[in-house]
Image 1 (cartoon, one colour):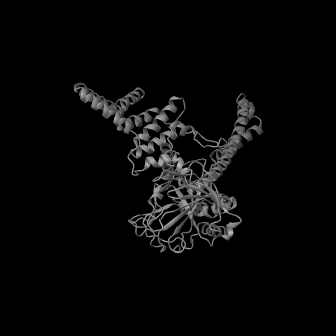
Image 2: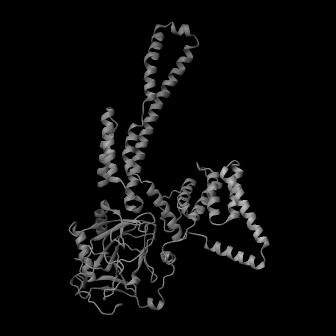
Image 3: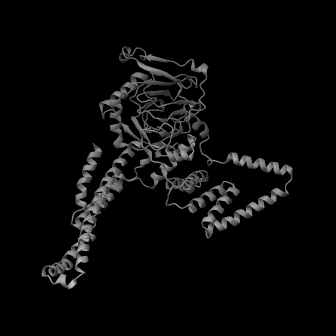
Length: 566
């Protein structure tokens, strides 16, 4: 409904912006443009697939407007063509006997009329700007366009997916990703697209990804694909990024190839001399070395080659995190697995679940992670998404030092908070969580709904506040986060698992189900084995909602113990 209202508003704006009163039109177009810009700025489109769907409708509306413009131009050209053809025949006949032709008074009159009036009308027709409606629409819609940050964010997401799921550039460029629905139309990446990814990596001094994507652009050019990006530019980036990674000979080879195409290329000529000098120096040192030194150098070369790859990372558990996202390195032994069960649960004879128990499945033992199946119906999920979508904003994290909420590059999603009084569905979900867990949700945070973006993820983190974060939830006055309830509101064809990096556990999204775990031991101490992450979404649209339950109100529902790890 919101989309329809927006399009209806735009349809009313367009005639106004295209009216003959130029000053009034200019005033209103500028005013409305400013209003739309104010409401659409800093959208971070790439962080939410759900909100990106609006961009498809925006583009569809622009294509319709563009077709209208093309038809108007074609109609104008058709009129000019008919005029030209008519005069072509007339002038060819008239010039064969000019005096005889003009001797007829009607012909003489019509010549005067054509040159004095009709050619002027034709001039006005040719000069008439048919693009006014299209440009007005484009100006308004442009306020809903992604910006440079969105493009960069989406490009980095592709590289993140490439690394996490160990995909080669050809797989990504062709669009043949694991989990892709065969019915979905995928537009392969062009040379320009690959080049753009390489440039974005280069701007971050990420020469590893620069090399990969410039090589892919080069392969597609060599394969005969037409492109506005010339091979010389690609080779220039490629040779330098390879040199920066210590491969002098390969950098020299690409530089020579570049100079065959453009022998006057100033930077390449300078690089050629430098690379040749460095290589000669290196060869001279190697020639003077003894056998032991040669073996040591070869060993160093192999070690350097092994280390070549992604830049140094701030996340120490990156390797383990990505392994779990790929479904590798899960540490559940057969013996432990044999003690995991599925069951029907009535939550200690809760009246609501005695006749209709919930389906409960053990996902992990330490920490205990339980999945509850069929917790939300499709209609409830759609209602929650409907309530959340207009309010989705870039997801934030709590700064461990200040306690202030702020955006972070390692959390790529948008979220919204829903209160119980907004809609009966939200109130019912809150009550359901309380009935199933046996915990008081009156002191819990509001229901948070999140939608992940391109390569959407949330890197390893704790839900509870640690001892070095004494002010993490101080403003709430409800104590620490004792437990987490996470609802999956969509299936994810590929990627998007919730992984627990400390224990090697992975939980995969299943629409309508929820997973639950305690973040704190009964003693109130944090359970550090609950460190978890949301893996990047490779293919699909991931929606989740979660409830963070706090300590206050649980005094008689989950009693304390004196043992720190119990």
